[in-house]
Length: 161
Image (cartoon, rainbow, N blue to C red):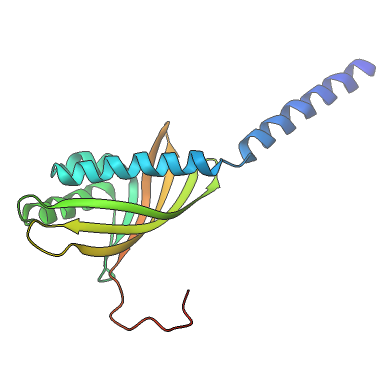
């Protein structure tokens, strides 16, 4: 009986340690580093006009909601959309993303909001806002969902944050 109690106690410790390690929060520094690395890779694929490489940063069933509200789901469909978009870009167009806030929801999920600037030589940069959900899949951080929005044309109220 004592051996059985000892084995059950040891198993309980192992299970509780495993559960705790899975639930242990990711540090903000680690979260920010993951987001920064992802954003650099994302912008690099855009700047090189490499839709295939950009698609490799997505989950298989990723979703993209553009600034007009259209939703595209699936890596292949998003790659086709991005290929068409990139084909129409003026030469030298670059993308710069800046995270404003990122939060680790769990050990394998990060939500990030930020500002994306599309820089076209000789013109004023276009600004958009984004929300992204990154998930850890097979050891790689991938984009599971993103939403893009243009700045509002309605004046910001004085009481707005």
